[in-house]
Length: 512
Ligand code: ADP
Image (cartoon, rainbow, N blue to C red):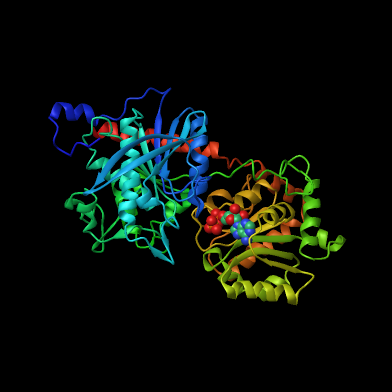
């Protein structure tokens, strides 16, 4: 189907076409567009979000279409359609495969082998594929065309990261007066501000986009075009993965050069925390643990502590069992606060605590922890590597979990810790600030320890506060309980997205 170009329809028809899809409350539909989703393809956290969100939205009564590329090796379900799509003179027959994801959710895999049947998702040897603009324009166009052809008119389109950035842009240009898609509002979610989809401006005509988009308030970014900026400027509502991160990215310190662009849209920028997979991360059913436990009976947590100490070759006698055990599971990089930790090692090992660390990353940080473990064999355990099962036992067996990230869009480990009664100690940024309440006497719902300044002394002070409170068993248990009962489910996140979809619809209605 060829989209109707902007301004080619008579006014009366255009008015009708531009009203948002009039779906009743019983049948709202969202078209989610993204470049990766579990279980089809994954390079990062986006895939976890797009694996879980459609199912959670379907549980709330939404019909969900999740469009993503059919990369090499992806099992895709039966083909349901095939038709040609043309972008700036580049024409290919595109296939569509459907996989059900739940009662009213399905994945629609876009099969265009010329663009997606490649060695990797985005590029090879640290070099992006040069035709990435066309590849992800095709994903968006194919998703929109498929929705239009199949009568799956979305109430709202929800696009993710720069790869989905052209969805709001096409909806405001090429499809503005389209008989089916015209007026459909868009929500755009930023998972990673560091990837901005920057390309030469001569891509605009090659993607059927008008030159008037090459403007500072549209897609232009320092002489180039940015798909991320397009998503931000053309969507009705922009979201990111925590409330605090929504504020953080409006500052030069965390804005990756996009803080001004985001400040312009501050009124429409909302933070929604990611949920955690509660089937996988549940201490009462976790297969990796020596014994199950829950808020009402924490005895299994002690078994996990003994287990993890012995797996690290640390003594598990009475003294060590009583001494607080601090865990870390992390990429060993500056973003995760390893520079701060490195500046403080002598103070850390002098604390009355045992340390267990699991991670991979920069060699200097790997070496530092390996060296500390060798120097303090009774106090420090370090494991360099990736080990899912061990990560579960650490979450269960540790008393405290340290996550001093310099910045953290959402973060998962602190949420796992809360669920496992392991008290998090975190820097007050992004999702860490949103999920952990500092244990001040004023806070009835305290769940952990939060430090504000990104300095060694602030981190050390938070650790010392935690170690002191650990001695007060009653208050410690209150902290644990509050954390274990906190709702970090996908159902909660999906309810917030539904409110945002409704907000985007009402924006579009007041505009149209
Ligand atoms: P990020 O995605 O920035 O690395 P998150 O806290 O959001 O940080 O998520 C990290 C995820 O990866 C968590 O599920 C964590 O348990 C897991 N992880 C990180 N490093 C390891 C490791 N070495 N072994 C096992 N799991 C790990």
